Image 1 (tube, one colour):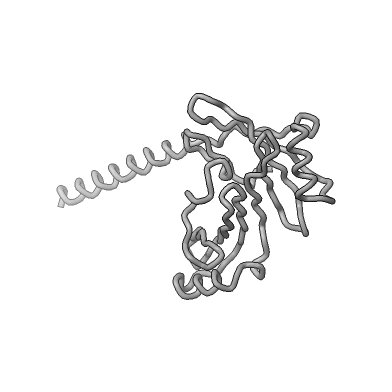
Image 2 (cartoon, rainbow, N blue to C red):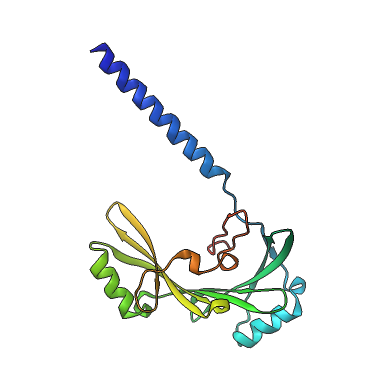
Length: 189
C-alpha cells in the first residue's frame, strides 16, 4: 500500500513539474514590438494608401511594428478603425503597399459554404466570432472562426469555399510575426 501511495505521489509531482515547465515556456513568448504612433509619424505614402482604400474613415489609430527579416529590420504600419461598425485593421509596408485587411464580420456574413463545413465537420460546435482576412499580397481571402461548444473552443481557418486553410497561408507580416515567431494579436488597441 505504501508503494502504491508513493508511486501516485511521485507521478503527481512529476506531472506538476512538467506542467510548470510548459507554463514557464509559454510566458517567454512575447509579442512583436508594436507601438502606437501619432499620424504625423506615419509615412505619407501609407496615409495616402489608407485614404484611397478607405475613403471617408476619419478616426484611425496608427500602430507601427518592427519586423525582422534576416539581417534587416523594417517598419510595418497598421491602421485600426471601424468600418460599418466593425473593427478593421489594414496593414501596410512603408512604401504604402497594402499587405492585408483584417475585418471582424457578423456571423451572417460568413459564406454559406463555411457554415455548412462547420455543421458537417464540427458537430456540436457553434460559431461565436468571425474575422475576414484579405491577404492582398497573395490575392487570398480567408475566414477565421471561433467555434464553441460546452467545455471546448476551436479556431478554424477556412477559405471562401469552406476548405480548411492553414494559418501559414496568411503570411507572417499579416499576423504580426517576425522571424523569431512571436505574434501580435490584432485585438491589441
